[in-house]
Length: 364
Ligand code: SAM
Ligand code: DTB
Ligand code: SF4
Image (cartoon, rainbow, N blue to C red):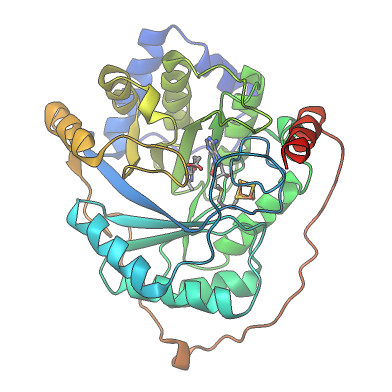
């Protein structure tokens, strides 16, 4: 086994990222085989349990209320509807359901109680449950853990420097603090980011420094290619080159040997050959289902055909970690604290975000 290092420097990571491609692929594939079965891929299904109307200004996101996109907002889904979708996901070969909410942070109250019930319900279907609900406090993380949550997704999204050019309504440190809160429980951490937002290679390396120096490193690292959605500040960004995706996946694999590297948003733009190279470079997880949260994803049947063609097998649930027990609401040892956490609001000005906001106002 290669050692797990928590002291990667930006320079070292950049040097790996820029290696001649054949060397990079060989190194990444070698490390991949030391730590994982190269023929197994973990499959998660995304479910947007609360869509649109978000208060944040994330420049990439079609769900931010302040931009004009064609996303239809929805209230929080019901538990039974979520259960039905989870059963469908299980039947189609998914081992995990990842529930996303367009929230800045979790607020204690009825809606959070409902999410906890969704977690219990899916865990009882013997599937891994993941949530991505924005910032959470330690008490909220503990309540999710007690309900049987397997993973919490909270992306760093970019380097600390470039984060400021994309989001002004919260700070990079808030993201790290939330990950820290998750780490106080036995819930696994899923944290990665997006490439193709106009960042430099230094920022990609900077993001990997921030992720790989976490101790322990995240159990799962999603690498998203920006889906440039009309109306968002990043609508005009050019599609990510497949070569960049392959390099990013390979570098992630090398600096975080044990993590599941997730080939995430942007797969509709990638050929099978391109995706195959990403799997060779160490990607061993995908989001399946015809939709991500609000944007298209490859058809499930197409993905299954690709798996067959490449000899890949979906990973069974709880292969990497045992199933957490579910404690029923009535037996819970935690209270809703009604906390009013003071997450940061830097509110600096990002020119392109302002422009998109003004455009949206004019269209109203
Ligand atoms: N609201 C919560 C938050 O921001 O943490 C959870 C949901 S948010 C949609 C989850 C992640 O989706 C973001 O951190 C970002 O990495 C990814 N994402 C959102 N819009 C995207 C886009 N247009 N292209 C690629 N990834 C995107
Ligand atoms: C992640 O890293 N990517 C997923 C999941 N975590 C929540 C979300 C991708 C969203 C792409 C844009 C959309 O469909 O709205
Ligand atoms: Fe809201 Fe999350 Fe989208 Fe940012 S990424 S606008 S927090 S849903």
